[in-house]
Length: 371
Length: 142
Image (cartoon, rainbow over all chains, first blue to last red):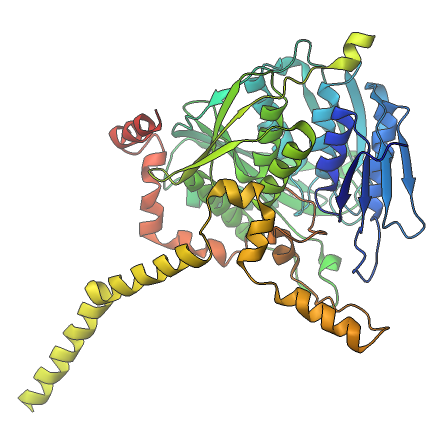
């Protein structure tokens, strides 16, 4: 096996493998959590590798005994219908969704997959965020939004999960469209979803009330849907949470969310779950924080935005974001490593934002042409 | 007694002057300058694309400590302090940083949004705010 790119550590595991798969360059990752009490790959990372094998043909994965070294030789992205993947209970479905969306776009045939696991948790963006913020974002890059679909059939709160979502991603026909996306506009309305499962439906209303309490100070047009699950659609654990999205005059979507943590997760210290009122306030304050940052996307979507820009045709892409997050900075480094695209990054002191300009790598969906 | 009161008054006004006036401002500027010189002798580009320089800029006490440890005792487990996972995620040079795109903020960090002035600072980011200042903002973009 060709050596390809050599990387160290467990950071940005998904982005590394996504870029490796897209560019077809094999990777070798060493020193994966060698200093940790529990060294090696985590089960969710192994699960992600299995997912990659499911959607591609001929990929090769080699892992050493302790799981601290990994070789990955990407195969051809096949896509496919009727796929099912169990995401386990250590990370939520959101962990798998972001890479899946990017990979799905450049497959041989459209991707249609059912994912089972945790739908909402505090570590990864929830499925609601994906549905109301991430997927509409693809529109800016020339992807027809009607073909992208994310359906939440069952809610699954941690720790027992039991949620199920269905994702459909089309393939891009002629590459993405380069964007010049620097006007973030003014917030014209705020929407949201408050979900509750296996608890009193009143929880949703309590979250909505407290969120409105904060947001109505700025804007009257705040509407938050309540989404209650009981019986078959409710998964295996009780839980509730809220996702908010601010829509601006220029069509940018800024999102924020808050979710109850699982009581057992905290460990020996028994903490009661957060009150719905606190969650509502927390989410809305997070949203204000994101609005203050003033980018065309929120902090969660920076990495995805840069990745899509880098995958554009050889044309100039210009985007504005708020303060760069550590994760986004790591993604920028990986983009340079794999796609050889370097962004020009300039702070804009007047608005305290950052403007990034790049020339796309001219990436083409090669798998499609072979077929 | 009147004298005592006057002295107290003068002291108070002096303290006030210091807090809001020039005295404090110059100190604040000094701090900022020192910060700019030591930590940020670099642009955003360097911060992102030149990790080596970023590392040499702030000394690495952890690393040197680790070396001396291995000399002293051969079979000592590498010490890894139970790091706050959030810190772990924010440290750019940590090889095993948590793979998540979400930046968690605590309720305490968000407490500032209780403050009226802080709230007013983003008033013009909403359509209910002042449109002319917003158009100034977007004009500055071009």
